[in-house]
Amino acid sequence: MSFTISLVHRANIHIAQAIEWCSIQEQDLEIRFLKSLDKSITYIQKNPFKSQIRYRNVRVKFMRNPKFGVHYIIDGQTIYIIGVFHTSQDSSKW
Image (tube, rainbow, N blue to C red; front, top):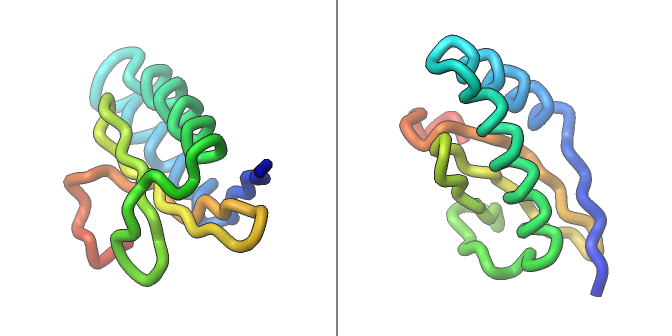
């Protein structure tokens, strides 16, 4: 079964904010973030049901370095990435 990945507009905003945050925190952290994000999205596309549902049918694939979570929903053959949040952020933003 093949799944298509779609990033919603809000997720693109979250990713841009994360890149900006990473660039302020540590040299080359934004590069590690982007590599980790790419690996996480590839994993999600290959194994969409392996991450647990955390809230309202939203699954979260946690990245390790830096510590962000990729929030997504599955609708038929499409995986919608709806947000990317640092794990220390208030969960009410999710």
